[in-house]
Amino acid sequence: MAKTEPRIITDKTQMRKWSRAMRAGGKVIALVPTMGYLHEGHISLINEAKKHSDVIVVSIYVNPGQFAPTEDLATYPSDFHGDLKKLVEVGGVDAVFHPHNLYDYENVNLSGENGGVGAVVSCVEQGGFGHESWVRVEKLEKGMCGRSRPVFFRGVATVVTKLFNIVEPDVAIFGKKDYQQWRIIRRMVRDLDFGIEVIGSDIVRECDGLAMSSRNVRLSPEDREKALSINRALLRAKTAAEGGQSNCRELITSVTQAVSEAGGKVDYAEIVDQESLTAVEEIKSPAVFCIAAWFGKVRLIDNMEISS
Image (cartoon, rainbow, N blue to C red; front, side, top):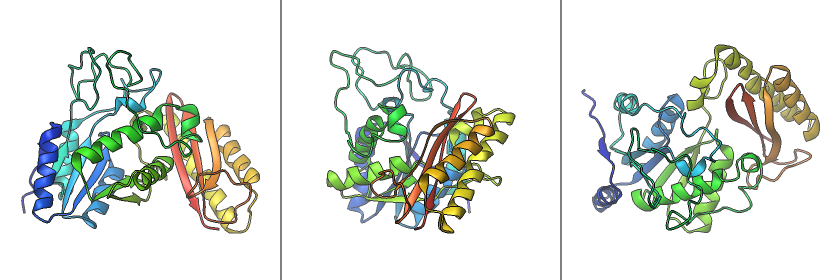
């Protein structure tokens, strides 16, 4: 059976109109938010969405609001036509929301390709009448990635709120690779009374164990091989922890040492409670080992859930 292309919607009003028409017809809507350059990890989110909905919207939008001026917005990989081809192949995607811009930058020129970021390097305050309303999840955003990327989760929470308000889904699917992000969105939905079920989907890995990420294409062959140390070290820590080693400092030391010896520069390595993301000294309840490390110019994140 021939697979059909999803409807491409770029206008916010048209997106909302389409969603409301679907809901009026009794359809359950799932949203899979992405920044494009789709891989098998994203496809797994779409397959998860099929279990919970009648129609699926995939958003493709590289969100300037979560990048600081020094970060990699300008070099973030993009292949919209390739993304569409993958979506047609997987099937089941009814609409792609691909807005050119979701923020007001006042007088900044937004003309350009692939969403038209143009001269915009980030969505920090520009002054004047530019975008100035932000959503914060104050406690959960402070640790781990939030420590080294202070505007990141503000940008994530804000753009997801905008997507929720525009698409008006019943269900939203997020990958657990971005574990802190997933927990932040769940807390935001709870605190702000969104009528949306937020579902976390397990990490999808390459056959050699590297967590799938759009940034992996920027790794040199040498750095990609070195990056395998992350998953290997996390697996050893998980096995040790579930075998009875509960001292978090020892587990963290073993992982950071392994990644550093492989040539990585560890940004953070923490074992935290799965719900509160509070650092724990001893594993007595379900925890998650989260890590971020640089290999060359690429920052990778990964995690491993640990049963108590």
